[in-house]
Image (cartoon, rainbow, N blue to C red; front, side):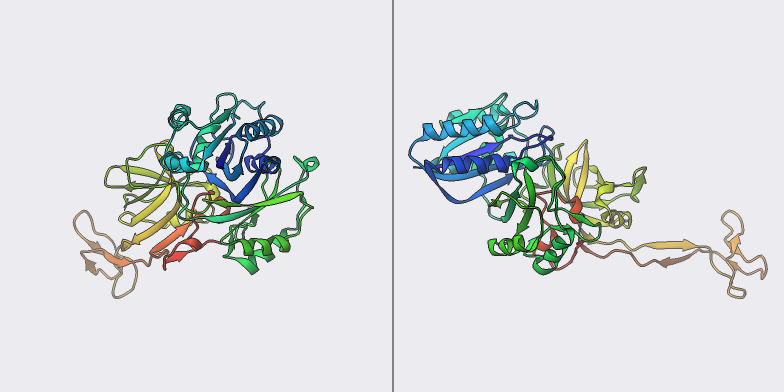
Length: 416
């Protein structure tokens, strides 16, 4: 009998990784069942305040004859490897028959775009009589169910390598140049590995988790080439996940704007962007329903220059997540640029110097030549940006954000 097993919330900010726990579970369950296809790494709503780290859940399909034994093995793995001592780690594991997966699709959409409660998960478990394991408050049941139910119309692959256990928490050993060299050869089939402008290697995490590095790509063969090109310490094992990374699956088209959701919205810039201490740039953006504050925080680096170059009247399509009534920008599409005019005092036609005000409502005069004029000189300044898409650089990109290199559009300005 074919079962989908979903796992979530086994890690913490101090260590471990749900993909690693799921891989160990797959290995242990291999004694009683056969893995079908690639396991799936499903990223959920990135704005959820109680997430551990990346808010990713894992699911995989097995042919099983003995469900009770499978649940016993899964329980052993969770109790041995999950970060159960951390107050924010609340694992959940679900065991869903193949014919019931279709009923979880709507729940999965909500988990990726909206905010769900543990009670929402219990209702689904009860309605469809789904066996499960829960630990502590069981919040991981939300992600476990969603990882099984998510329907991926768009997807990429992620190859993740894992360190030997004795290396966990220790500095990673790797050759930076090899990652840049690989990127030169395989981009864009393998993407978001490095950030050339900001000198960051995104493939190697900085957390004390079991992951050595992860490579994201459009096909399996490119990832297998990539893993041979990068030079690192020896890794113990690796696996390839099918994932909703880089798909914009979290984005809601318009809709009522609420905190902890992500949107694509069209509107107009209503005032000149401003900057605060720390290098964070903000703009006020008028939509059909409200005036919304949008932000480009310091970690978005050169993307802030695009926001600084906007002026009132520019028409934009913005993408981003809302927290504290502020939309944190992930990318923008400049649909229409307002002409930028500047006014100056007129110049004297004889001596060329700028005229001075002759007094209120009396125009302008040249003190030397006595010439007069009655209107300021108005001229257009060329804009520093063009229409089209702009995105945050790779080092500031969220897992779910679709990079422009994957978008079928002509006008795109890519930071690489």
